[in-house]
Amino acid sequence: MSPRTLAFVESPVQLLNVLEWAHARGHTTDRAPDPGGTALGARPDSGITLVVLSPTDPMSRGQLRRMAQLARDEGHEVRWEEARGGAGAPLRTIGGLAGPLRRAERVVMGDPFSRYVQLLLTITRARDLVVVDDGTATMEFVVQLARGERLVRWHRKGRRGPRDLVLGPVSAVARRRLTPGGQRRVEVFSSMPIDETPRGVTVTANRFAWTRARFGPPGVTAGADLVGTSLVETGVVDGDRYLDAVRALAKAHGATRYFAHRRESAEKLHRLAVETGLQVVRPELPLELIARRGPIGRTILSFPSTVVHTLPLALAGTGVRVTVCDIDPSWLTAHASPRAEGFLSGVTGTARDVHRLARTAQAG
Image 1 (tube, rainbow, N blue to C red):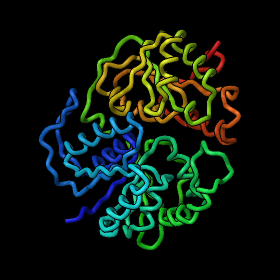
Image 2: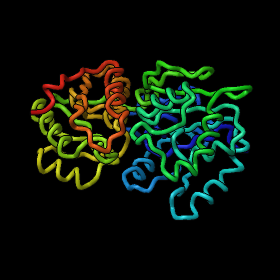
Image 3: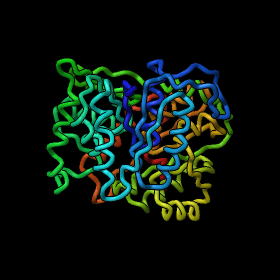
């Protein structure tokens, strides 16, 4: 029997948010919280198949492997696709998924900006489409959908390259499929603040209930932990300025650990460890789960990113304070998108239950 629901994920955070959506919809088994993170006694009765369109970088793949096991423990079927494993991989992957896609009644996706997902949307006949968080990009997706704009990631420049022109028609079809109409329903399941809701789209709040039910509560230490970002790797923030800011924050707040983003380069992290003295930690799971399992510092320092929205939800009731450090405009590179400053400011300004540092206290 084909699954009623197909979920497509390309990152560990997307997979986490599919599990949160499934939990909110009653597609998981009921168990007591498990501080050690080992799920037991699940029954495969959810009717959900999670399709992992595997990326190539080792950190993402490792986290996805561990998240996939958590999904199996919850009773979901997981289908691992080496979607980027060579020149012929996309055709093989899409060809193998065409049948299940046409039969699925619901499609859940973690990244509507993904060219892979957009191609798959041209095949599906599903009447129910669900978008779960892919971090702060969800905020931009909802705004673009509401305004009828083409789907493009916030950190990309305004000009369109040859690849964008070739795949433009695919993106246009995906945008139409993600616009409710007739019998087609669209839901956005998000922990992000959404003020401009597209007409006909149902917005459901992600409260991280599955994470809180399955893990913790964590042990809380007296110190501070710092959360890394990939803004340098995406070309938004200058590497030297970023290092200066991390050093100043660690000194001002007594931070000892630096939780690396899975996309941060090994070279940057090595330099950061040597020049700041911070212990660099490469998490084996998304930070929301790492923090919930603990131990975690009483203060978590972060630059504008998804975690300033998600960690307060995952750590509700623990006494942990999330503190966000704004990105100073002088840190931006010449290659940063014109939209970068406004978007990053909006990420910080809309975060709930966080403490905001004044820019004058960030570096010096």
